[in-house]
Length: 180
Image (cartoon, rainbow, N blue to C red; front, side, top):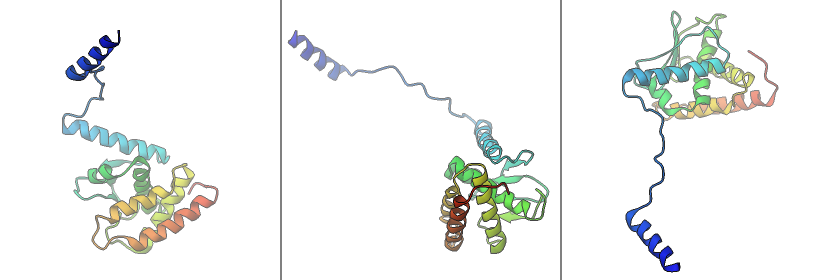
C-alpha cells in the first residue's frame, strides 16, 4: 500500500495535478466596455456622496485630474480613475462639488484639481470635500491620499496643500459629521 502511495505521488508530480479552472469575470474587449466600467465607477462615487442630479463624465485629458465646468458636468480623466480607489474617487468628486458649491449653485466656477488655481479656492474646496466625505461615512483620509497621488504627477507637487488637507480633514473627522 505504501508503495502505491509513493507511486501515485510521483505520478502526480510528473504529470501535474490541475484542479478546476478558475472562472474569471469577463474582461472588456473594446473601448465602449472600458468606458462603461469607468462610468459605472463615476456613478457609484457620485451616488455615495448623495449628489443626485450632478452629472459626472469622462474627460479626454490624458493627465490625472478632475475638473468642474460652469456649463457642464464634472469631468474626471481615465488616468485619475486608473490610480485611485473608490474612496479617493469620491474625494475627487467631493472636491469638485466644493468648487461648484462655492457660489451657491452646482454650476459654480471653473476649478482644476492641482492645476495652479487660486490656493484659497482650492483650500475651501478641499475642506468642503472633507466635510462631505465625513457626512457620508467615507474616510476623510481619502482626500489626503488623493492629493498625494496627484501631487506626484504635478510639477512642484502639492506639499503645502497636502499638509493643510491632512490637518483640516483630521479636524473634520474628529467632530460629528453634518451635511455641508
